[in-house]
Image 1 (tube, rainbow, N blue to C red):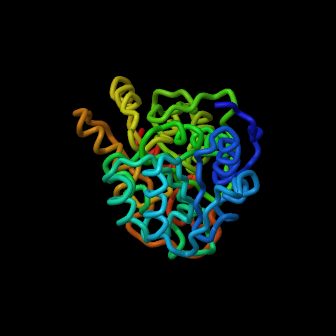
Image 2: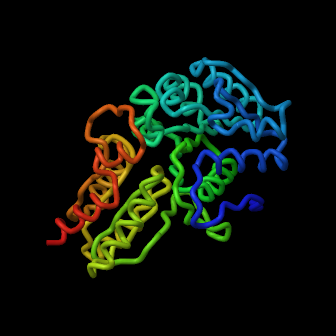
Length: 319
């Protein structure tokens, strides 16, 4: 993979931006890539692809169920289809097609669910996908990725294109601080250690990585060393970090912009059970509620998904 787009470290940008730039770059080298939109090309940043290869851009309109069948057909014809829409529309409206037409046949289809989580803010509950990770990771053959910043999203997009099989890439409209450098490696299924620590492990993904890093900075001033784990791949989950937590007897806090059921925290709990590891663990997520309109920061604060709340939970666990 040749890195041709750099998102400067420290600057804020959205993960959808990294996806769009990566796809536009990749199609210059791979004429088999087909991009498909459900009337949201600018919102999903497929417009970058369209500018480069308009003859390979397909607009299906507001018809997500049909979108799943069309991408399956392109894959069966030997093409590399990439479909993008809002996560709430793609995962919920097209789920039957994704399950049966794509995953059952293990087709090489890439799906990008954009505007996921509370970060879409004012658009409210109907547009805030808070259950998409749960739905996608239950599907056999599906790989699930949740990049944390624009540069990582750029690299994750290239990784999905090189991976053989169905992939779901979750992106956001919400801009997060870029920590990833162009020299950082990205490997599906290999978590990234953001900060070293041995007192508590903060396992997170997507926009919550920034909140966990900020919490680490506050905790370190109190003499608490938190290890922040960017679990950008939810499926397959990197269990080596859980084994390391057990070796150091570290309590775990998972943080995610998703329902508490079926997401990152659930995946971690399932893996701990399979490994026979018993550790104190706390899950920070949306607690069985629908979203609502508000700014992203207001919603994160309401649902306890801020660095301040992470610090409070860590302090309580270590007393």
